[in-house]
Length: 166
Image (cartoon, rainbow, N blue to C red):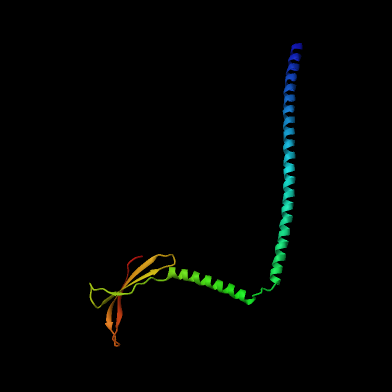
């Protein structure tokens, strides 16, 4: 019985030692977490202060910009209508350039027709090239017969139309 009690006491002492070790580790963890928490709180506080300063500066800048805008709007320009006309003319010039560039892309690049000497002197072949909006070039061949007109010229009566390239 004594031996059993001594074994139980030794076991309890060993368990108590383990628990004291756990308590010490937990206290160290709590201390490190507490320090980390304090650092994070300080960082959060400094970030909040910086944010407030930036917001105040932003509001001040907005006020200054608004005041400058009011001053500019209230002051009549010395040239008056001339400035507006100049700006409008510049806008028109830019739009004309853009339209011209777009027109160059979409404009059909057609060649003049020519007589096809191989077939017959009365046959007339017209080659027509077009560029679509994407920039693809299409070539079409139009054949016709030359017919004399009353005024001394020639007119072309179209026979058929062939599409050479897609």
